[in-house]
Length: 435
Image (cartoon, rainbow, N blue to C red; front, side, top):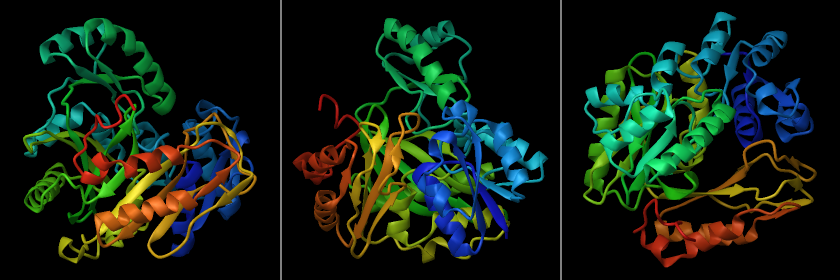
């Protein structure tokens, strides 16, 4: 097992990983930009080290500085969290060349699986249906040519990363030409890679994802599916598990086929297979995230399995100690993402408590919410025995949650989960259009 882990991230995910390290008896090292010098993750970690100015390019995306920080603090592993460099094969390779374990897949697998276009062929060969699309595009002219073959509307997507960054729909050649450079710039800023590819746009549809764990000796376990269709500008807002759109028969088939696919491609670590579910009940593979998902807490609440700890154990070569038969998929968990709508300083915060509720956040009184980074400031997650009860619980806790000093989307989350259409479970990725 690792003795010291450097967390190559910030915000709530850095806090989450640091807490897991403390519970496992592992020394944690926080990196921070000058903007984050007083952030909660720097206060909770056993050690901390500054890696540069506020801009992500000079700090949280600067591979050389992060590696230097790990070596200077004598860490023996790096946990990338999500976003930033979490799916960057070059970073994983650089870490391992410097004698550091990278808590994620090997650099070879990272390169193959982080290529959102290339992974489709491997998944298709493994037996899953995939959304029609292209390989990595070389130019806007190639994108226009391929879009004509696919038929509009199409979805332009970043090859690397995730979290809704670098994604733009296009309903005509003129629109595709317009959004191409915008998607390139956003992708390069978020992931250090401006490469894009195209997919056929399937709509209306449900966004369904399957959480898996896979170790080095070939054990693969699925931990159920999550419903992630409530999105604004391709950024997820609310997730729940299990999905109200997936029957028991559909679930059993989807989870079984996902496990078989992961075994065939030989993946190791924590990963998520993302699908679109059309109106006819067909699942189409979209992409695979080879990292911890933002919404991993939903699965943790539902199953009682700590994904962060298992991610660390698997990277250390420890086999999974349970099978799918041991996994509890009972009850309902729901998560509301809390996003900052304005920057500012937290004047006061009240977090609801009680059985089966958690609020993953980096906020505390005096915390500076910066305009330089992602707007996510917290995730409110609840669990009960039924979907209806979970939604009532979530409404109560959203009303109790107080974050003073910035504007947030708490009111929007509350309106969504109070909407009869959402409560019926009969909603899709178009739910927020025009709202």
